[in-house]
Length: 419
Ligand SMILES: C[S@@+](CC[C@H](N)C(=O)[O-])C[C@H]1O[C@@H](n2cnc3c(N)ncnc32)[C@H](O)[C@@H]1O
Image 1 (cartoon, rainbow, N blue to C red):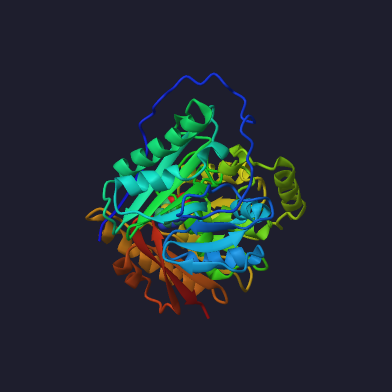
Image 2 (tube, rainbow, N blue to C red):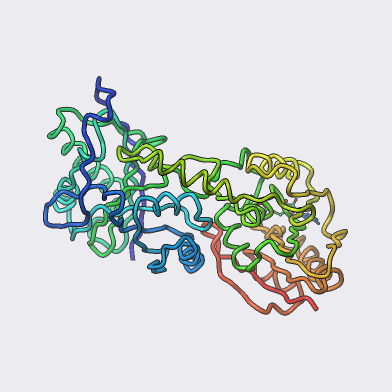
C-alpha cells in the first residue's frame, strides 16, 4: 500500500492587473462528470456531493453531528463522512461540525492511471467559472494505492491543468498562494480514481480561532470535541478536567453546553468563492448566535499544576467568547474533590514519549485511579491516553474503550463507572 500527501508549495507568479472578481460570473450547473462536460459550483438549492474529512475514530460522531444539522444521508467511511447538501447546508456544516477537519465539495471524479489522464480530467473542469485570474489558488493532494505515487508531481500537474484552462478562457492565469489562497483545491487519488474537490473550509476546522498560543501537549480541538461527544455529556451535569493544560477539553465542552458553534470566531474558504452568498451566511450566523446561552457557574471546571497552562486556558476561554464561564483552579490532581453527586470527569494525563518518563508517570496513573475511586463516587470518569501500559496503573476496570487518534498516535478513551 502506498500513501502520500502534498501541498503545492511552488509559488508561480504572473502579473494580473485585473482585480475585478466579478468579470467571470458563476453560472451554476450540476457536477460530476468524467465525460468532459463542465463541472461547476451547484446552484444555491442544488445538492453538493460533499465529504467531511474526519480524524480516524471519529467518523460515526461526525455522521451523527451531520444528522443533527438535518443532513441525514451522511455515510461514515474510513477517514470521513460522505453526504450531500445545498449551499446553506454546506455553510452550516462548516460552522457547526465539531469533530471534522474539513468539508470538501466534489467537482469531478475520473479514472486516472497516468499524467495525461490526470491533466485531461482536471482540465475538463470549467475552472474559469470558479477562479478568476486575479484570485489565488493552492492544491492539496493525497494518494493511495495508485499508479501515480508522487504527490508533489500530482499537485503540480493539477495546478498546470487548472491555470492552463483559465488562461485559455481569460487570457491570463491565477497565482499560487499556499498560505492563504482564495480557492483551495483537493485532489485525492485512490486505486487510480481521481476525485477533484473544492475545500470549502480553507484552514482546517480544528483551527477554531480561539487558541492563541500552544502549550507543550495541547489536544487538537477536534479530538477534544470527539472526547466530549463520546462521553455523551450534554451540559445538564457538571464536567471537570483535573489536568486541563490549555483548557481544550473544557472549552470544547463549554461550546457544546452554550450551543455555540465552534466556527463562530473564524472565517472559511467558501467565503472567498465567487458564489459566496453573504446574506445567507449572515443569516446562518445570526440564527446561531441567537441560540447561545450563558453557562451557570461551576458547570465546567478545569484544574492544573502549571500556572502558565492555566493562563493560556483563561485566554483561550475568553477568545472563544466564553469569558467568565469556565472556572480554572491551580491545583494538583491529588487535591481534586469534585462537588455534587454526579458529573463527568475527563482526564488527559501526560503519557511520556521518551524513555524514563514512563516510569515517573506510573505513580501519577495510580493516583488517577485512587482519586476517581475515592472522591468521584457517582461521577463517570474518562481517561484519554496514548499509553496503554501506563493505563494499567489506573487499577480500575474500564467499562468501555474507544480508539481515537491524536495525530499519528493511537489513543484510548477509557470509561470508568465510579460507584
Ligand atoms: C497532556 S497535558 C493536558 C493537555 C490538555 N488536554 C490541553 O489540551 O492543553 C497534561 C497536563 O497535566 C498537568 N499535570 C501533570 N501532573 C499533574 C498533577 N499531578 N496534577 C495536576 N496537573 C498535572 C500538566 O501540567 C499538563 O498541563
